[in-house]
Length: 114
Length: 113
Image (cartoon, rainbow over all chains, first blue to last red):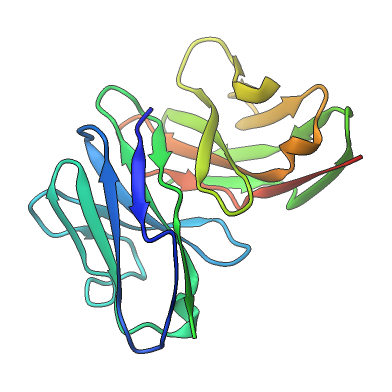
């Protein structure tokens, strides 16, 4: 398995502000992803974080709202910009390791926008 | 494109009873199948996976699942549940070309004494 450290674990933010979430993995991974889990819902893929290049976003998600960085193989950030109460969700980092098709997940960041 | 349907949003069951959580998928290519568990206020933990080979796969905490290609199903079972199994369970699929992981809607398993 992979040990994934995600920070912060939770936060309460004012609308109109931005929050950057960090994801650190203990070993090199092939792919890193960011998911959103809205209250009582399943997980929705936001984007694939690509090392050294722009992230690949899923339909309905845009870079201006969710800028993502991945400067190296073990670290990525997701920023939730200009937040509104509708952004209140759990945001999860996920990784794939070399040689295995299963994804591993961080503990998530529980975001509340007031 | 793949999709996953979990047929039950909530499954209440008494302790020590057997349980089955149902999952059906659709895909035009061969896939990998997974079950994840999410305990309250935690991330997702892999329960078990089907990659190839034997259609009956065993996972952690006494759970097992059976892959049925003709019925495109991957139902999760446990012969005797514990209170501690209370959690949200997600079925997920990925195509074997390295595509993204697609999740079902989740099933809330509630084990009562």
